[in-house]
Length: 370
Ligand SMILES: Cc1ncc(COP(=O)(O)O)c(C=O)c1O
Image (cartoon, rainbow, N blue to C red; front, top):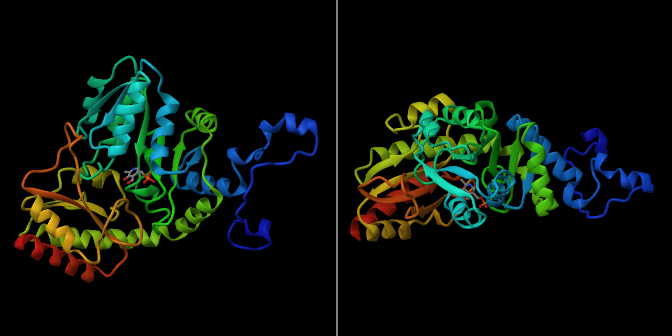
């Protein structure tokens, strides 16, 4: 509220560990106080949590130092030894590494399911299934999950549902409105928007939030003040940036779909994409990340990528600059890359779309010569 901060439109950045109490009674009763120690939150982190609650329609949000931590903390919150966890096969590969590593070591059984499973997930539910984890669209392969059908079956089976909603942001999809219990974001991507900050968030229902917050505080992880400020600042322009990312990405996806050197384009807004109807039904739009299959072998693919001058070669996405990476899906068991060539993921930034098209054409020329 500007009126409570001397009229300045942005909240101040609080740096702090200690919070002083006026007397012992207040100190002993600190659990009822909004702020009692730096780790459990400051007015700066609360401003971002509140903003995300409003966007997600959630009862509470926690902040974490990376998007990956926003995946691992809710999984740790709701799983114990002996439990069974269902995870979509097209999941972000570090999520899978955590499931196959830490969760398995803890005694959790992890099973991967087909992103197109829909209501069929009911047949995979066991009495000990405690979590169903969705990511949609899938990392690199962009499959769309029928979120409502999966959540309904999970709820009937007594499991908590979590969704990595980073691709859509809450502007294009609100998981809690579709039956998901916990919505996960790598705030590093579109909310930050400028490739200068790493952060994650988990937004939860009234029923699931207390356990999530308790685990966060038991683990001792929260977001840093200046990083939180950068994400608060990024959120203010996320809507207009996302519109531009989405428009440019679709224009390039359509151009690639008609290109002789592209075997397939994996973009949910293209009418012939297998998950298109489901995407239309559930999502309010598309962001700027998609994939395409270059005709040719790895040598051609590498020549394509090495010839790009405007697209950078690097991980992450959602920032102002365009990026390209070869997709590496050797850990998948179900959601493999399409046949016919070399799969490349493109993050479309805020540059001029004609310049980006010219850069991709440079890549095609190099691939043909390889
Ligand atoms: C879908 C998805 N979720 C989570 C993450 C992790 O985010 P961070 O890089 O902030 O750890 C990423 C990162 O690329 C991602 O693509």
